[in-house]
Image (cartoon, rainbow, N blue to C red; front, side, top):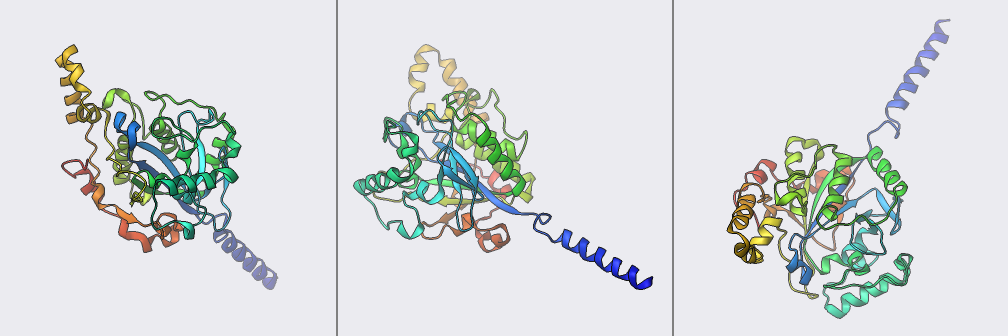
Length: 342
């Protein structure tokens, strides 16, 4: 009898140990990143707030309009809301093509010119983006098109605000994206790319990102979303927020410009001048809005540079994050950063 009880006890202990250390019960961490992309070109002059996107290490693009769990060796996808690309609300592109218009890191060119960028984008388009439709324009500075989906780092500088996610969160987001009607809801004032990014961040951090009358008259901007994410991370260090600087590849166009709030955009672009003749009080409100709420200090000069030949710090498994800890900086210092980095 004692021998039987001993065997049963051993089996029970082994079962508990197997349960505790099984993959299903061990926390499985990955990472996502909010990509704050600088404005560039003619449209960037008219609207210098820039663009927002989301990168997911565990979520990959089955097609530009459908996402799935990544297979071993895949580096994840960038997903974002665009205006007027085949009437979809969001589109997904693998990380390396999104940044550099090639499929693997070994293909990233050491230097480019305008013709090279066009050639790389065309080469990627035919086997991967025809699912969008044959009538989708390539686009350019004055008209948006499928070229926004590939080679972003040839056009502008990108800051990646990386944070930890769980497997359950990522799987639930995959289901949400695939189940929702993926039809364009874009509106520059009420439902832009930053609004979409804020909704995804609210999926991971409920109730953190919301629209308000001030700053910027209730219009959501990429810099505002980045600031709120940094401020939230200051109170929640378990997010392991790390900031990376993906430099613009020189040769294709002039350097992109820093992301601005709406109020600062109106001031620096000269749009406040005609408002003065309508009513000087409008200009006063814009200045007060910027000084009181719209500066968003981020201290981006302290972000860790991320080189094209080594994307590992962005896509490392969570267990290896200590190796990339050089990208971490004090969030108290970020929020106390004094003059904003414009």
